[in-house]
Image: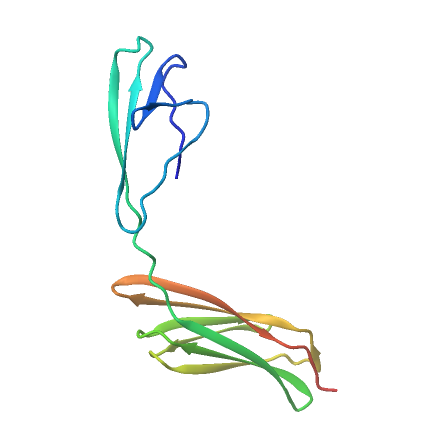
Length: 161
């Protein structure tokens, strides 16, 4: 973690954990591993180098953001001489998710129960398409906290003519 600690007046002094620092340069503080908080003491002296105030900083790692286990695959097929794009979304999470599939040919939405898959089809109305990707965004609640995921599903170029 980097700290930028400046005294109110340029002739003031700043100590970090008992060490006088160059207050014109950022200070790197090692953060404890795991869940252990890191405590750092900052002591700032006024211009008279006598008047001072002490600050105690406690650095605590934020809890990891909940994750959704959502995957997607895309494929292109020829139907009546036109390309149809099929995007299958799978919810590997233990909670239901709302999702949206976005392609160059539109957006489709749905809700997936835990452990289920659902396919959305997109009529391109074109005889051929270039390779590309669809984007799936999902949102749900894991352990009482909002969670989201975004995954890309690549599809190949296809010509139906």
